[in-house]
Structures are given as structure tokens and as C-alpha cells.
Length: 258
Image 1 (cartoon, rainbow, N blue to C red):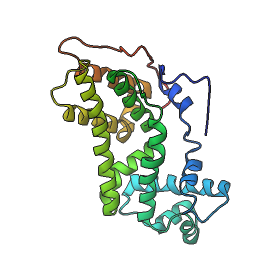
Image 2: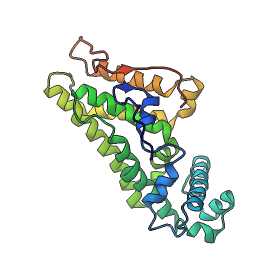
Image 3: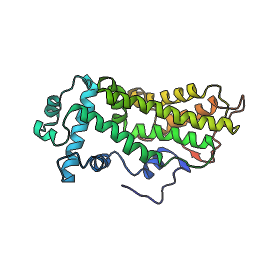
Image 4: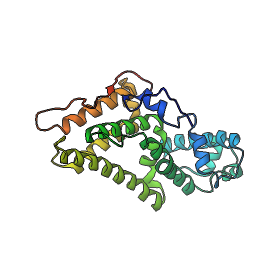
């Protein structure tokens, strides 16, 4: 866990500021994972467990991206990681358990940590812009996790498939709720909040599903987040009056690391 009193989120709305405030990062995510599933993991020495969890899940994401999770076996995972089948069973008992752990970790651990940094006060426009940025920033930090849940849900057990669909429905509902608050407050104009929320979420998902395209175009995390917030303003502008960056926050674009 990190705590930096000099961090200036959400007043300074950029990727660097968000990473400063988020209490987990790429390097510490497996320590967070171990803490979340301590009771299920047989290896109790944290340093050894965290090291092997990183190896196991890095290999899982790699194998799934190349051949699909459905085609991957635990024996494939054993061969890719160099960890024996018996060693793997100390961490995961089955493919279904592995998939469930990823789903649960995203929904019950990572997402709450991120959304705790969202605005609880402020205008609907401020809260919606901040939420969109959080989605993009989290997609940059934990892209393999989000991509795995989205792309591989079709080959998971029914429980995991249903849970992955629920992620989409919940995220759409949260965006829709803020949009409707903005309409009720006279701050936004929207003929169909459901479709608008779905369209914004699709653009969020495109960011972590097609990372190759944005790397090729040298689009940074802040570039994309700024574009999405600008598009949100245009979609929800009150007729022809666009509200460009009325949060009072500093939106920074730049070539930050993705």
C-alpha cells in the first residue's frame, strides 16, 4: 500500500497523479492478490507466494491471449511457468478457480480501491469525467486483467460468464446514473442515457482491448482520457453550448507511459 501526501488527485486529473494516489500498482498487485486470497492459497510465506503468483498469472494471460483460455490446460500452465502440477495446486485447484479468482479480484479488490478515488461531491459532469478517467487509468495499469475477463469470459464456466456480463451491466448503470443526474440538474442534455453510457463504456473497453493500435499511434494514457472527456462534453452538451472542461481541474495531455 502507498500513501503520498503530496499527491493532488482529483484536482490534478492526470495519470501520474492517479497512480500516486492509488494504493496499489503493477508492482504490488500480487501482494494485494495474495492478501485477498490468503485463505485459499496453501503457500503461507508471502514473498514466495507473491513471486509465484506473478509467474502463474503472467503466463495465464500470455497463453490465453495466444490460444484462448479454453484451449489452455493446467499442464500447459505448468510447462510455461516451470512450476510442477503439485506446485500449481498450492495456488489454484482448477481452471475454473483461476478464472473465478481473477473475476473476484477485479470486482471485489481492484475496482473498490479505484472507485474510492472518485468524487463523492461536485457536479455530475465532474463526477462523470473523473469516473471515465479512472476507467482509462485502471485499464492502462491492469490491462491484462481487464482483457482476460472481457475476452475469455465466453470460455469460462457459467458462473464466471454471468459475472463478466454483470461487470458490463453495472458499469453501464453507473455511467447512466450520473448522466441522468446531470440531465435533471440542467447541466447535461441527453436523449438516451442508456445508449450514451454504453457508447462511452465501449470506448473505455477499446482502450485496453486494442492497446496495440494506440501504441502504434503513440497515443498516451492521458491523450486518450482527455479525448474521452472531451467527447463526453460534446455528447452531453446542452444543445449547441459545449461545456469544455468546467471542472476547475487541470486536465493534462502528454506522452505519459502507458
